[in-house]
Image (tube, rainbow, N blue to C red; front, top):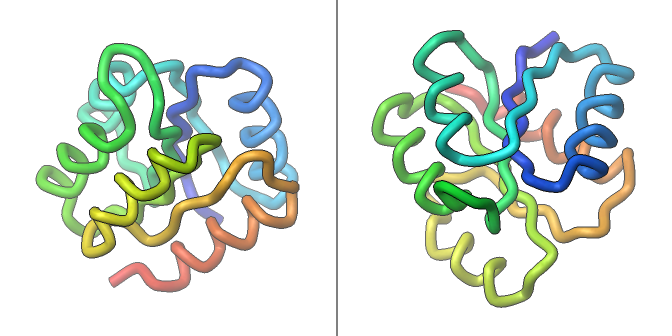
Amino acid sequence: MAHILIAEDDEAVRSFVARALQHHGHTTHTVADGGAAVRALQTAKFDLLLTDIVMPVMDGVALALKASADYPHLPIVMMTGYASEYKRAHNLESLIHDVINKPFSLTDICTAVDQALDHRP
């Protein structure tokens, strides 16, 4: 299946998402902030970036901008629990595939990831 980078500062959410995607057949690499995600992107090849919007060091919007500039064919799915951040993410419509609102179910996250992977160039 796919190798997915998960950037999420909340340990419980990060673990839940990683387990859900692994159960769905994907391999995952998890990091706790945007800076660590940038370093991970520089050292390994990923098929998808799944990132929270509100994180320390570098937020998900800055991460999406950097990732899309450096890896233009990398699909990006964003997660948020904040309505105001959802609007910020939708201002990036040309760079990201989807924004998932927290809380989400295992089915929600797997469906969003599968749809983003299906639309890879």
